[in-house]
Length: 261
Image (cartoon, rainbow, N blue to C red; front, top):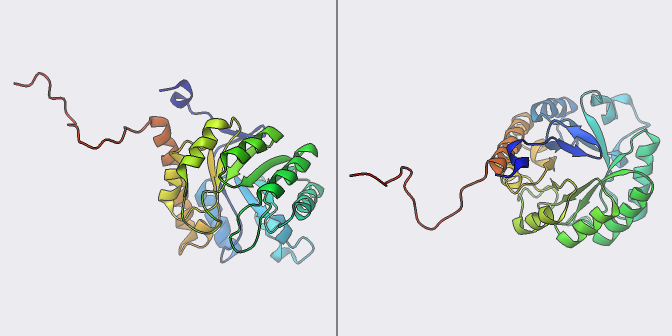
């Protein structure tokens, strides 16, 4: 077992240490109250918010930022809904105007698949890194693009496990493994988690963390699912640190047979 596995290190992104490896969202919840309860149950200490959809100039009861305790949770504004470099950069600058320098960058290709636009993602990442943002970048599970984004200086690379809201878990585990092998910055699987086993399986690949929203918010019981996601994230991390036994075709006895008469 390698030394880093014996003593697990906290997740550090952009100089900020996190107590949890699970990042949760704020969209699609039935009510703000259920959202708050789910956040608490998740154990997360970072919450992402689609800033372009926040009613900053509306009634206080409609502004989701009024329902998040910033003493308990770090806000991670995101550029969800941006389908161009210009829109993504505009939303990021709006976040900075609100005093937030962290940004989860999303530049989507089109509304049907909600897959990231690789060219737009790279271009927007370069602009925001050059402007001094701490960029968490949502991208495809392409190992080459992931490395190019790290080389730009992003704080974390966030490959999609599967399309946003699809509930398929990690479709291509080999690509995630290749990304983990080639990157030194934190790798956070983002999108596609449907149930607890999806998170456990993703964490067993050795990723640094997971971001999910729909799988919790749209569950029949979001609060209970948030608790399940927390436990699955922790269990998957522990299993990766422990080191699984190899898969074999044939069985082997649990008790040694040598020396028996």
